[in-house]
Length: 391
Ligand SMILES: Cc1ncc(COP(=O)(O)O)c(C=O)c1O
Image (cartoon, rainbow, N blue to C red):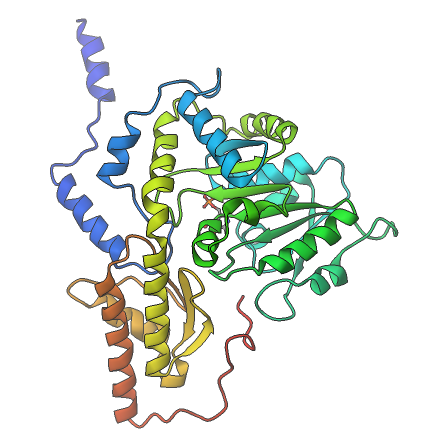
């Protein structure tokens, strides 16, 4: 080997597995088990990777990757749609769905003001599709109603206003379940005006488990739906967009155009299949743990801002004279720390039961200390769950 070639090889080579990697990964798993900030942090298990490593080895850009095609066919079947497309992320799935639906501005997408499409996709609807958003505050503080949609829909009658072309609903939203009869009513109304329905069903799995409703029934009122594998289901990457055959064929072009065409993704599809088979059935435990956290908080005297309908509970400790910062500081000071955000507690399939017990013990202890220090809960100052709007 020429001296210069071996020097080049030396410069390029890189071993990223540290000597302490196994211990670091074990510590990471522990951290995840005690983190309440999001369910997007769930990590693949060795069992998931072992299964996925046996997936097929095709190239999903040159042709159709076999394991991925099988996953897409399965997703089309369980959602009752004609076709499906594996996506690198939930954001890509939503944005490509919107882009594929929307052809010629001006137009508007109607959605809940708290929705991911409105708040957390970097203004993507405007950037990719030239769309305006009508971000509606639900009048009941929980979910959009048919009346909310009717009040905010923009018809093709007045040139001052960009007409509504899509109603995009999110289920679950902040962990809450959108009543299916309301979705059906909104869908009938939207379709009567030739307005498309899109579902951001990143966490639709939770609705299916909690209500015993099939994924197909939940997706039926929608023309297209996006479902994520990488949140509550614990896969490392991936979402699926489902819809009519022609629509998905066009979305495949947009996925490539946006740089989301992926090649040897059999291993990712394998992770998704594992998540559907092994992790989905674990969600009832997740919901039970979220309900346990909610019951404990209520019993201690915190306000519940949004109930643990699935895997999240939003709470307010101020009736106890306690702040989120105090709870987070106590949590991080434990020998096995807890990782907490503000009002939102997210439980996921890798949350350990002891983390919920430790969290409740901290809130209980802080409340006791505040009482001893003379804090008295003011009467009537705190609003109940639906009176206080979550943003
Ligand atoms: C409801 C909802 N939709 C879409 C997304 C986007 O998913 P991703 O982070 O994979 O882009 C998220 C992310 O958390 C989400 O919560």
